[in-house]
Length: 440
Image 1 (cartoon, rainbow, N blue to C red):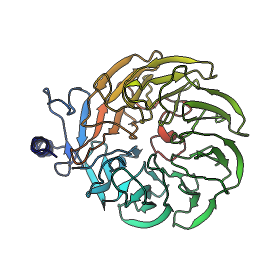
Image 2 (spheres, helix red, strand yellow; image 1 turned 135 degrees about the vertical axis):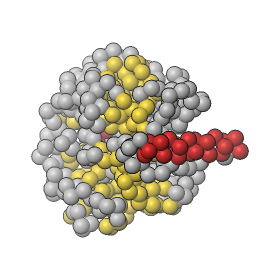
Image 3 (cartoon, rainbow, N blue to C red; image 1 turned 180 degrees about the vertical axis):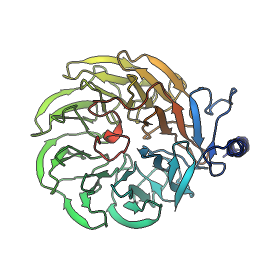
Image 4 (cartoon, helix red, strand yellow; image 1 turned 135 degrees about the horizontal axis):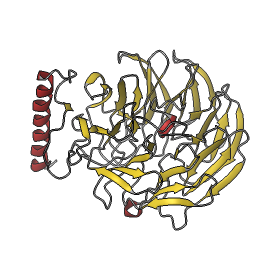
């Protein structure tokens, strides 16, 4: 970090200390230390948040960021962990956090130079599950180990399980938690664990089954996920229901239609609509003139229209695709990579993060019917795999990435919604604010 950058970071932290102290003096929610800040009016320096009057709170983790941090919002708390992107040197102060809705730290589980490689999910007892990567180098995840971590409701370690030690460098591992508290996660195989960490079953095939996305679970307990060579559905007992062969990038996760009868999944530059019961391809659609690939997970509205954006640098585009796959409702040339998966509010506005695009912003609020940008905001860094959640009451939560110690933030923004869109097939990444692969 340059001397100027270090000075700016020290100033930001000092401001955070002063603002947190002021909040506590006024009877705030007990923010713990300089990592919780309440923005004050005024124009901030370029590249820092605050240009939007909608910013409510910011949590500063230090010299690491939320590259993969798709937050889980359960009860009155937020669960999220830190990492840098694989192209950067890993940090040495990573942690997994439980935060209040006003981003005060409730507890912290320290990870050192290990990184949280996806979103978290909770079981009915409040135990927390998330994937951790250990041992990578700058620019490569080979060799590295991936683990599933289980913490108790107070943030103490319960158990860990190794889930892979293979490439690729890209993608996330996100656990899903079934109604019976079975934990599902992909890696070099597809795993099912009980809450005590016992292996219930493992699904594998002779062909590669590498999974780097988020499995989803239907109302009957069946599981759906994308792999390096196919999209799968398994029964709750780990028996294959169907397999659809695919090719190309598979880092996008599946999403359900409103009535669970269809599954939408993006692979490379195509979106598939599959019959949930049989895997039959109902339609597949590639937007005309598309550049790049889909890494984001689709959101699905209450009419089964599908929404997601591309990774194509300054040619990145956000698409709204018709429910029958017949074409595009609208498109918005955001101009910055769209790894972030959108969330749809009950104000019929779609919220999504991006890397720094042509608009110079990294949080976008788009009209659901037209794609017109309603408002946007600057973050401390790009929003990459972090996907927004919209809690009851309408507060949006999203994280930004860190680049080799320049600092990042996790943010709370006021929206015009009061929650996620009701009746949607998938109003946000992994089905709901709980981030557990289910809509409930």
